Length: 126
Image (cartoon, rainbow, N blue to C red):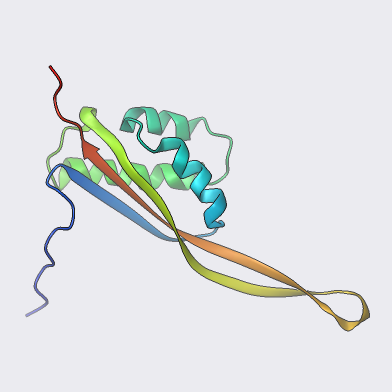
């Protein structure tokens, strides 16, 4: 049988892509997400390609996935896509420790993040 498909939460001119458990803190990932927010999809891809940040390659993959979803699943025009939303959420935090002097420990936290990118087709302005 299977479950009924959930109703679509996005409008008809939008598509999204989600990546869970990216191994970087949400604060650092949000810097890269803010870099592409509101840009056209093409400009965002080129900005991520030439970014010096390590995580920009993972963000680029999620953006390419959102563009592919828009093109293949929703038949949107790739040339008119804009990064409407790019938001970061907090995921799990691995807790580790390192031995320090006099029998104490130093806490090490290794945070993970979730990333959601929504691309939207902009209206024709003629």
